[in-house]
Length: 78
Image 1 (cartoon, rainbow, N blue to C red):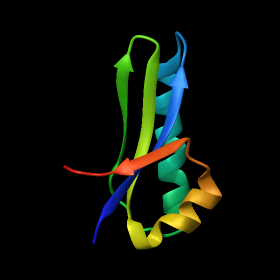
Image 2: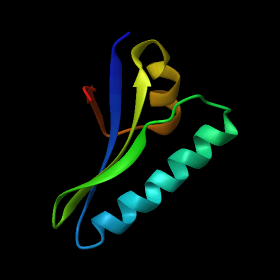
Image 3: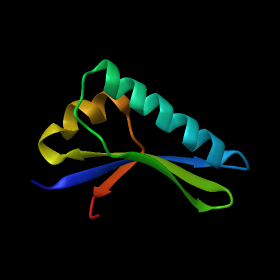
């Protein structure tokens, strides 16, 4: 099964802190929904661009996408 990485982009001097905090909210949401999703994270792309993300199987993507409104997505490869 193909996996997708749902991504939220944050820009500005506080992008890293915001992305890290957003990951906390993603984990809280997954816990409330009793989800079996275990891959979440945040990454600094540049000094002023960071992302928060979660990885989901393609078949389960639509409800998460509609509920959480990620900015973009891409095929996940580990």
